[in-house]
Image (cartoon, rainbow, N blue to C red; front, top):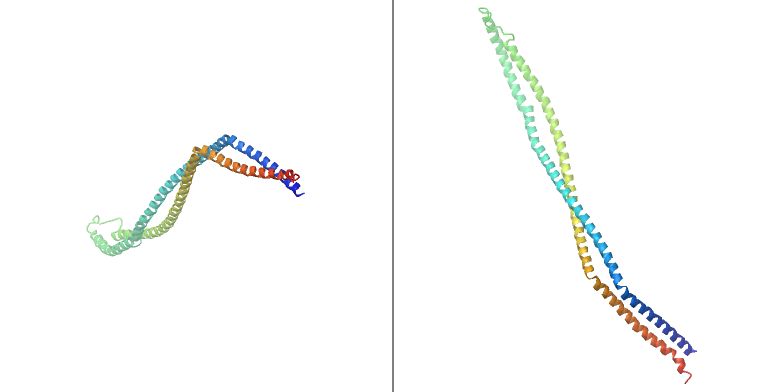
Length: 271
């Protein structure tokens, strides 16, 4: 009974080893038969990948150029805004100077002139009285339409109106200066925002450049693989052939062992 089981096991090993040898031989033939189609298919796939990478690299180049142009435009605009801010800074002292004149120097000068006119007005009354007394002898000698003291009084009144205008102008200049400072703050904020935008554009440009470099390296690698594709395919085929042959050796050994097991029963009855 034991010999029968061993013989059955030997037959199973022989059949299994034989089938494995057939499959191995079939795989070996297919490996070398499909070697050229696999190489052609891989070449087409690599060509497609290379074409996609080239298109992507072109898009990245256009994007990088656009980002560089945008960065340049933003930098130019930021320079213009900074120049405007500097002009505002230069304009503010001029407003302060004008305001100093309108709120202090000029009103003080006009007040001094008014005081002088008031003193002259008192003297003019005396002079006017003396001149009028001379008209007794010669009526046409002095007969003004407006006495001198009244003319000086009108001039003094006019200067007082100018002081009121200076006060109004001082208020307007103060409001203008406040508005200019508020506008200057907005200009500075715009310049700051533009600086941040330009910084982000430059970072994006650097990122795009890095991707362009990566695309170039990948294309170089693909071209290298394409140039050596036949060697890679043949090397892979040789490796698979070696593995199959090694398995074939093992399968032959199993076949021989099974065959030996099948002969046990044949020799047993002779004993």
